[in-house]
Length: 123
Image 1 (tube, rainbow, N blue to C red):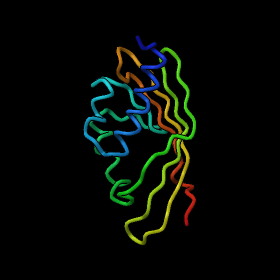
Image 2 (cartoon, rainbow, N blue to C red):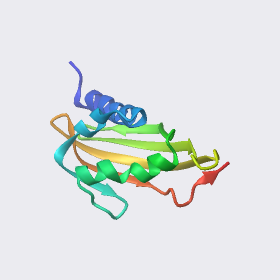
Image 3 (cartoon, one colour):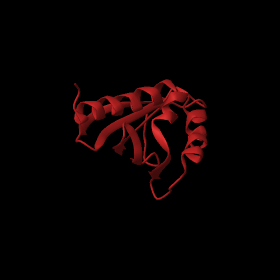
């Protein structure tokens, strides 16, 4: 039987893989009442679903690579690098960030996403 830590590790990896695949099942991982923190903003799950549209339009091939990860019985934390090519001119853009999620009942109940795409590395 898997431990909570093993389940949380798998949930975190699934979260990342589904985001990279743009799989709508990604939005089933947080509970409908999950609290989301993106910088200083606190969008609802519904708002977060549409809030990524400008990023994905500008960089349709962007992906997050997990650089480091850790878990405990109630959380997963990822340090990641996001990279993709600008649709406008093909330049590579990269930036680092982290995701810290609280888990309850096998789903995300609260999540913090930190990334500074205002200071990207450009090719």
